[in-house]
Image (tube, rainbow, N blue to C red; front, top):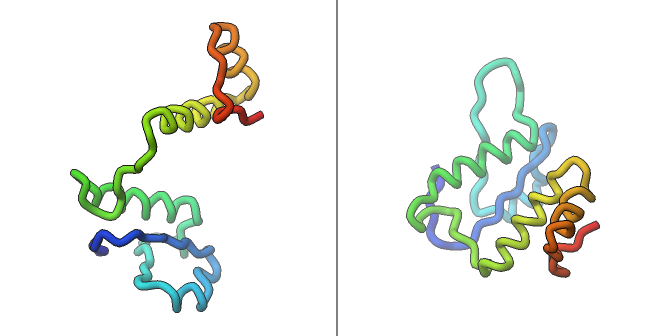
Length: 113
């Protein structure tokens, strides 16, 4: 288990075959592996990343732990959230068109297409 000492952290995920480079490993304060059982030899990168972030998130409660609340202003957070939601629509031009039809003009910060 990893414990936070309130320093910023950077997580570097290696590929399935070789992991991280020796240069990266030598610069790391800590390294870890994800234990597995079963027939697979390794998790793919997206699964390994999801497991790692889920563990860090679960360890972060009440402002304690490795993941801290962000410092985005509410407006910036809402813009990023809206952009993400609009980008998740299978037909990218539908979301902005619906908003425009309702008289909602997207701010410059959200223009993406």
